Image 1 (spheres, rainbow, N blue to C red):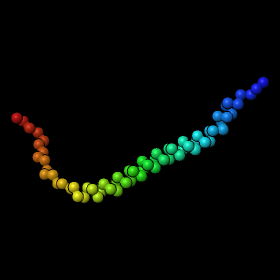
Image 2 (image 1 turned 180 degrees about the vertical axis):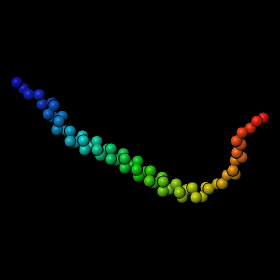
Image 3 (image 1 turned 135 degrees about the vertical axis):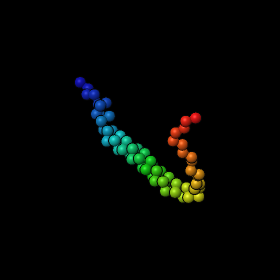
Image 4 (image 1 turned 60 degrees about the vertical axis):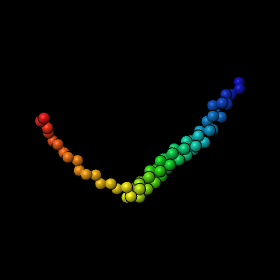
Length: 65
């Protein structure tokens, strides 16, 4: 009988697919972390020039009108 070789041929790709999957996950997380750090560092420079103080709002605890 002729052996089925399709399963063993697919099994040889497992390590390759694992490495590619781990690379994609690491790439995604590195882009996320680096962009988060970038926006945190640059947000302080932009906020210094646009500081606007607002007048305190009148607080009213209760009203009987």
